[in-house]
Length: 343
Image (cartoon, rainbow, N blue to C red; front, side):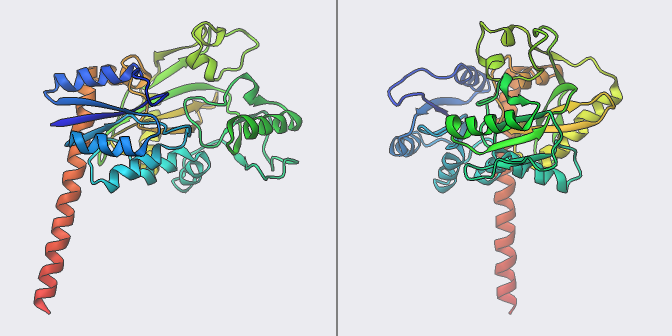
């Protein structure tokens, strides 16, 4: 197929892509596909003309932002729908659901899945109370990903510090703040692949043992992106060495959360395990990061899918999904025609 990798540029005239882009391109070419790359910052006309000119059979969507907004990804996906293009990953509605962490928790509640109790503080909210939440709390932006707005100060132990953190998120990140009860325990990431019968990969555990004693066991922005920081050097993701029963429980909860959020093709579920073996869903990440050494790719390799096979499997899943939708539409149209003819 002709596949266009759609990705974000920091500036419109900046030719540098995230390192995941050439990795995905190589994997797709190994799968026999003809690959082009379209990088856009925030120019809608460039986005439309680039896609129209390339005429892809499928868009491999790696666009996580658009323009100066960290929350523009769902708008781009909506445009792909309007252009009638096939693409990997969730639609605009599905993407918005996982982007809004409060909506995520409400859907998890409906499915009977455990999550931390929470309160949302919008920019015009009353900051005098966090409701009946128990300290300590973890305060983070409501809709941001990639650990934006998350750091050591996100973990608060009193109402005053909570209010300070909420205000900082309002002023610095320009997002509502989510305050949720902090779940002490082990942290796991479970990659999930598929649609009708999703496969949960072996869990990855975040090892915090290298952190200084005064650092909270959270994966904030410094731990993810600042290679010279104590947080980055003191954390590492490892294949979880856990009993089979616990592995199965983590995978089941992850598949259930994946389905509850209507994730398509691939995603990752972040979990916490308490010392009483209670499993809490922390976040559901649709269309998670696909870099070769990421937790998702590492887990896939442990399940027997090397990187090229993983990337091409995502393509196969997206194509299969669209073909099934086409088949359903044809059947409904035929049934409607036959019904009209019989009247």
